[in-house]
Length: 194
Image 1: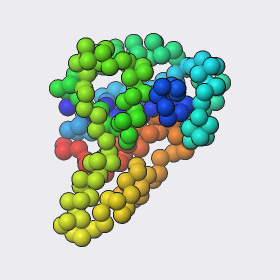
Image 2: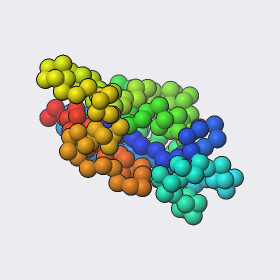
Image 3: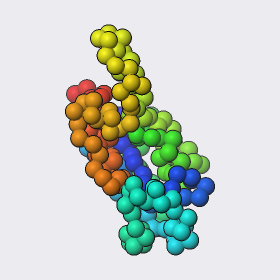
Image 4: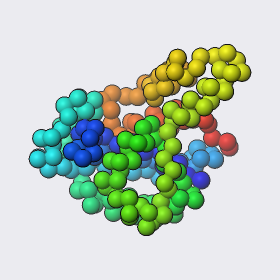
């Protein structure tokens, strides 16, 4: 079973107005933790799309229009991802997506590869999140050892990292940094069986 550890950066929070400006993921063997492949790209956007950017989002990820202009077109990225998934036989039975915030990443990922195409290719429809994994484990530990409950410690990725004595994600937020930090946190919270 493969984990598709994925992160996106966008020029805002509203998928009806804003677009994906960066995507990254790593394909990780969920038994061993071995990296099988990875992908990263900046996504070019038009000036009219960029003008609709949420300034707070751009402050968090640090992207400039000049950087975005050097990215690839959405259609090219779509084809590259489809080819990479075909290479690794990514199917619903063989992989799951793992994100920090899958409800966010999934809707922006769908801008690149629409839901009908994903369904036609029988890609995974399970999008798992680190916070829920941590939540379940923290509740169990709290009941056994009278530790703190997850709502007392917080459950953002950086707060989870702090609980496990891991560093925060590098700033500004960039997609591959987010993926690497997500895998680091996943390894500490859940781990790999072999």
